[in-house]
Image (cartoon, rainbow, N blue to C red; front, top):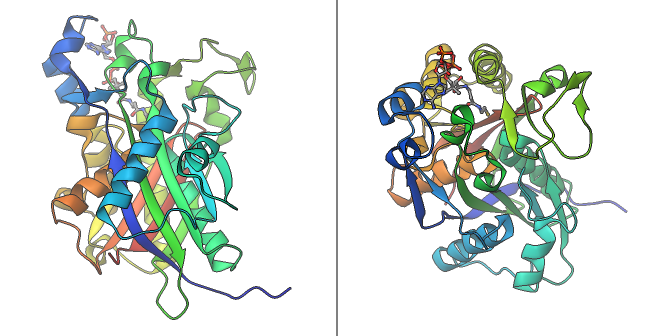
Length: 330
Ligand SMILES: CC(C)(COP(=O)(O)OP(=O)(O)OC[C@H]1O[C@@H](n2cnc3c(N)ncnc32)[C@H](O)[C@@H]1OP(=O)(O)O)[C@@H](O)C(=O)NCCC(=O)NCCS
């Protein structure tokens, strides 16, 4: 069978964050920390926390409803759903299957993808491949997290960072138009897996004993060092590969891990701080959801316009890196 070669275009975006706000002042009452320390070291002022009965699939469904409300899109003919998450409601069934069931999408395939904070950009790369090959015509990509359910609120080094939320992009095959995905790159260093993890079955990673609580554990200082040194290299390589420079790209959408990391990445890649899309002050680090949340904030307030180019760059546990240069066409 010969499949038609197609192009991939983004046709809709949606997002959702839970109502409950956890401020730095709230955290001061739980652990030995201060608003000043958190803002100075991370740029985070508050984060959203899912209700007890709200899981990653619930946030995903609300993000998709938001997308359907804002754009004239049919959900029932979606061919495939990829959900990027490190905090699925259950390992089996997938979050993507729960989303399919909620919207009654018939003939629709589903899979969850786990690439930590690089998950959303990795999922976009997969979706792009499915559309370019002509296998599917309409793919829904979701980044969703309920990190608050995997956070130790007695550990002041991690609990200040994480928040909950979800974002979704709809991608469709379009022959004749230019592809919105211009370039992509990935780079994993699995030897650093023990530096940032969420345990499940194995008591060790690469020979290192780990804390088997199913909460997120990290060596913040080492992850910070890796992000500044290796992630900046990865971003520069993606720009080189695509023949562009920061001055030729409108927006930079890095994973919102820490404002200091974003500032340092701008410094090492040539992006101005004003080009960086960050909603970290109000959402904290939402892992696979952070990039679509930051982009949707900029779409809603009119900063991003049709025709703009955006460099999306996810990085995190694994240690994973995954980037995409795209053209925004809606
Ligand atoms: C977590 C992070 C903010 C900590 O900042 P840091 O400057 O590296 O801080 P350190 O771990 O060196 O600790 C410095 C001091 O602050 C203390 N500290 C740690 N967390 C604190 C908090 N919430 N409030 C107050 N003090 C805190 C430490 O105990 C340490 O005290 P000590 O010097 O008496 O031992 C920082 O390492 C970081 O952002 N790392 C990357 C994390 C990340 O983004 N992960 C996700 C990547 S996808």
